[in-house]
Length: 137
View 1 (cartoon, rainbow, N blue to C red):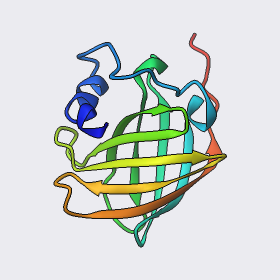
View 2 (view 1 turned 90 degrees about the vertical axis):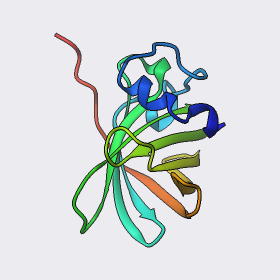
View 3 (view 1 turned 60 degrees about the vertical axis):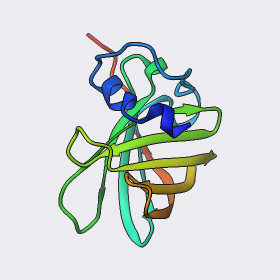
View 4 (view 1 turned 60 degrees about the horizontal axis):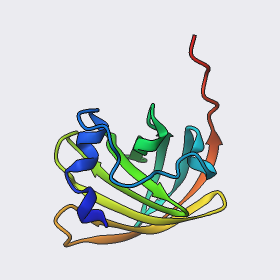
C-alpha cells in the first residue's frame, strides 16, 4: 500500500493534487486534531507532531525530530481504521523513509523503513499532548 503512496503523498502535501489516495480516517482517534507524540524510533528518542490537513480527507501532515540531533523531518500520510501510513522527507522533496503502524488507544507502534528499503526499525509513540485547534476567524 505504501508503494501507492510513494511520490503522491508529498504532492498532496503541497496541495497540487486534491483527491486522496484512499479515504482518510483522520476524523477519528488521536489524529482527529493536532497531537504531540513521544517515544522511540529504534534506539533514538523522538518527538512527533501530527495534525489533519486543512481538508481531513487528504490525510495527515507533520514533522518529527530526534532528541539531541538537529533538524526536523517532514511527514505526510493517511490513516485508515487503526492503520497509520506515512512517508517522511528530510529535504521536503525526496522520500527518505516510510512509517507503517497501528494505533492502540493513545499509542502507535510499527515499523519505520528507510527510503531505499535497506534498513528498518521498530517505533513506539505515545500521545503526550493534544493541541486544540483554534477556530478560524
